[in-house]
Image (cartoon, rainbow, N blue to C red; front, side, top):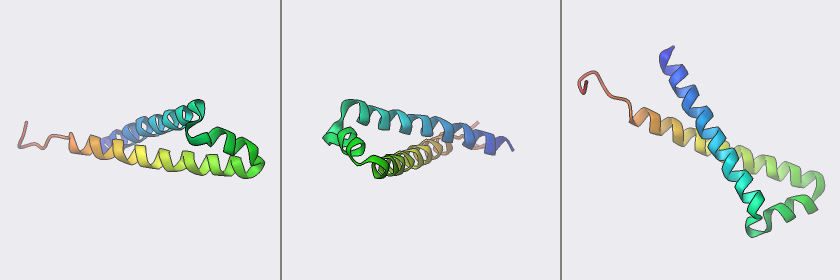
Length: 77
C-alpha cells in the first residue's frame, strides 16, 4: 500500500508539471499553437485536450520512474 501511495504521489506531481508545461506553451503561443487551437473551434479543444493528455502521461511516467530509481534497497541502508 505504501508503494501505491508513493507512485500515486509522484504521478500527481508529474501530471501537474505536464499541465504547467502545456499552459506555458499556450501562454507563450509557441509555434502559434494557441492561435491554431482557438481558430479551429471544437476541433481545437479536442487537439488541446490530446496534447495535454500526452504531456500529462509523459511527465507522470517520468516522475514515477524517477521516484522508483531513487528508492534505496535494504542492502543500501
